[in-house]
Image (cartoon, rainbow, N blue to C red; front, side):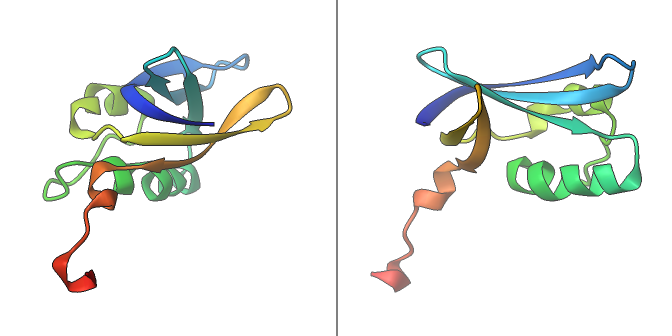
Length: 113
């Protein structure tokens, strides 16, 4: 499934065991919604979050990002840019995020023409 992303929601939630995690939901104009979760309790989980989400979504890279807890990330969600398109695939009964494409990935430099 490929759809144009119209909104991105970041929410801090707790699982059945009481552990906090960050849920990132990409919403489309026809109600499509694909989410991914990030647990941020260990350094390895924070590095994974940084590599797979923060680096690509952060709009103002000149300021250091320090929101490596679910509530801090939600408070700093204004710093993340919205992707243009979301690509997901069916895994069992649910949709799993494959990739996000940003507006600047469509721009062509004159050198390549």
